Length: 262
Image (cartoon, rainbow, N blue to C red; front, side, top):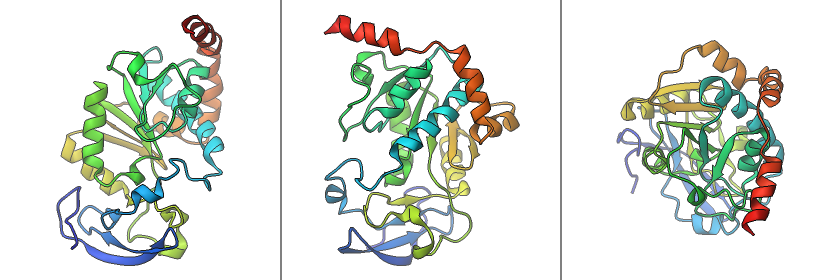
């Protein structure tokens, strides 16, 4: 049975079928109304997440370093550099640790993965009010993105989520033409267009800002859109050097506080 689209409730059609985890033939459903492409209900996820982080994700470290630089610029220029932030579905804690190394007060949460690199900075160690939450490379793993965004924002007491996911335009790419389907892992189940995320924003009465793979949904209007695009793009590396020199790294203070709490 094909369920209606979880974003706009429209009927969907099977766009293609593919084999995932080298064993399950899965239908990929396309919603012409909001543009969401999604697998059928993902009954295989327990098997797919036998390891929370896919062994084949060799880009994990490089991706987090690149994201931390863009994110540092976005927070410094458009939010409160001295505020508190939460990385949801934060994996091993790499992004949280990188952001604290730069000087931002970041915390970690993840229901399915062990915090290895940001121990002592779990969400439970601080108050549940954050300037924003981040969710990088998460929404493609979520079957009901609206429910996930609403709950994450409410739980964190915030009005903003900054996240990443690769977008497609127009008709979904053919299975052989887009690596992002990640058929071998079975963990990517939802695929978006800009208009899909705009649908989510409209439904939640939020503003939507986007540049390539980095996206912001917020209840607060952001001015200076051109600067936002610059900071989220390659020129963000220049902005990062400016930010880094003006922030105070938490490496040493975190070290002393963790030793004190042992």
